[in-house]
Image (cartoon, rainbow, N blue to C red; front, side):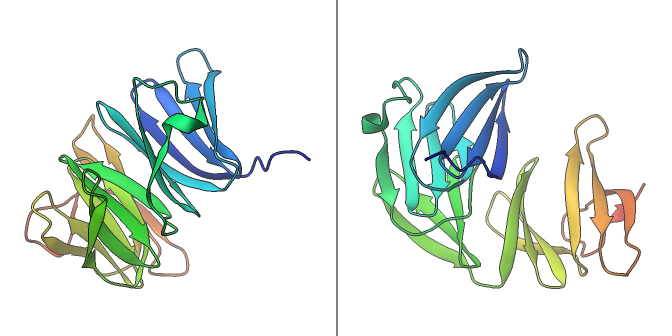
Amino acid sequence: MSDDKTIFGLSVCGRYAYVCTGFGVLKVDVNSATIADTYKFGTRTNDVAVTASDIYVATKDGVYTARLTDNLVDHSVWRQLYTNAFSYVAVLNGNLYFLSDGNIYLANPTTATMKRIHTPPMKYVQKLDDRLVLYGKGYTRAMMADQSLHIIYKEQAFLVYDPTTSSYWMAETGDAAGTIANVRFTEGSDKPEYI
């Protein structure tokens, strides 16, 4: 029986890319273009978040964590924090966030508790710069560091942060053709500033 090599997610932290597959996570050294490690979970992995000391893996069977100083190839060092199926995990300003069934959760890994902070219909979450961008039906919202939510655009839009210009590239899907623009977002505004 062969492992499911379908790619379900990708996270980049420093010089490593963490590729989420149907069997586990591949840690890829992007400088040398080699696989540095393989963490087998035996289940579909959806996303990875890495802090200075820990790694979190969102799977269809729950969220697993381990210390970065552990031998992560040894599955016994991983502990399951939550049993919910999570599609996304992010660390923002020291806080841990998850997406499950369209709900956004703020988690406390020390106590293994979490609270729902935003309800459906979230389809996708993306960490950009100092905010989480929440994609829902017909709108895009930004969650700021203080957990306040701002509608940043009323149509569906996907964003990529450009650190060289401190701006975002936005692909709008509000019309049949779609458009791509370079934009900045101003705190409190519900429309982007086109550059």
